[in-house]
Image 1 (cartoon, one colour):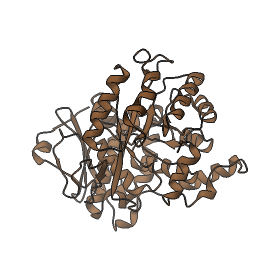
Image 2 (cartoon, one colour; image 1 turned 90 degrees about the vertical axis):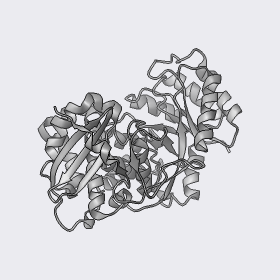
Image 3 (cartoon, one colour; image 1 turned 180 degrees about the vertical axis):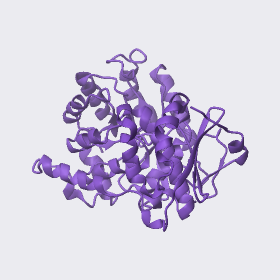
Amino acid sequence: MRVNRRNFLKFFASAGLLGFGQLSCSAQQSVKAIYARLDEALAKPVLKKEYFTGQVKIAAIDLLRNGNNFIVHVKSTDGAEGFAMSNNSLMISLYPIVLQRVIPYFIGKDARDLDSLIDEVYVWKSNYKWQGLPFWACVASVEFAILDMLGNIAQKPLGLLLGELVRDKVAVYQANNHRGKSAEESVALIQKSIEETGAKAVKYKIGGRMRHNEDSYPGRTEALIPLVRKVLGDELTLYADSNGSFDVPYAIEIGRMLEDTNVSFYEEPCPFDQLEETKQVADALTIPIAGGEQESSMHRFRWMIANNCLQIVQPDLFYFGGFVRSIKVARMAQANGIPCTPHISGSGLGYLYMIHFASCVPYIGPYQEFKGFNRNIPIECLTSKLESINGNVDIPTGPGFGITYDQKFIREAINVLA
């Protein structure tokens, strides 16, 4: 069956995920009604405060470093603790922001007010002037540790703190980045990664990443698109990501090639901040358009959802500021019949955060992004092997993120100072 937007959404209906089909955008609905529906979804609280009978006052938050790994450690006045791995590749440059503009705001606050705290840290000391990935990735690192602490206090897994558990395992798609290699080399490497994880879906890279139609390897994109399908066969679900490589005419041309090879979504055809151009591509094609990895604005996500600029939204749990904000995007998208398949950062424990997000968000895509397990971080999980078995990963069910860190790894970490 050829993949287009109608068939893509039909999948969710058949899976019981589109019980609100009457809410799908249609020509008869006014823009005002659409925005009202999104705002209603946006206004709902995320953290379930009923699990906590008393105040959970944050006493201390430390940023620790062990080698190239950055760990946020939060402690309440009652001695409860939570830990989270930062995005290590970002924190090496961003640590002054988290130390000077994020952590001080949260000290002394009641962690049960997390929803409003995430909103208020944005305006504290004019932090809104720092809007973007560098600021929100720092907020996410702190939020993750606070959520882990709250899970430990309530003795609940993360998904139950933020919603209802709707699945106990996640089907993954194998993400690859072989730009700079020929089409033939790329396909061989993709095959190898699929064999290792058993994934039933894969995302491959096309274009030259924000290079104005210039390919990363001459002729690679046009050769790769048909070759991936030919070599990997018709049963594998394929996604393609251009990372903003094309202008509108060329993006449409490439999109039609993807449609001809039954690719299931087309990610970031145009540069991520070119919203009108992305919408032009979406309007011209039948393949679902995915995006949002680089987005840091709730208001722009709201616009993209309301105006059918995207058919799959992809907030990054780090880049967009954490679970609370990303779940709000997922709820807006669901209210308009659009699935949320988050982008994940490969650094640190991005895969772990992704599967916990999937545990409590009902309206996600059939497969979630996966870039491999980080075995360099010494953790133990008693409720999941944290392995991809036939393309599925079991979601931990222990308190918080459901993992424990090797205590020697934590003891040997040093406090990062501004």
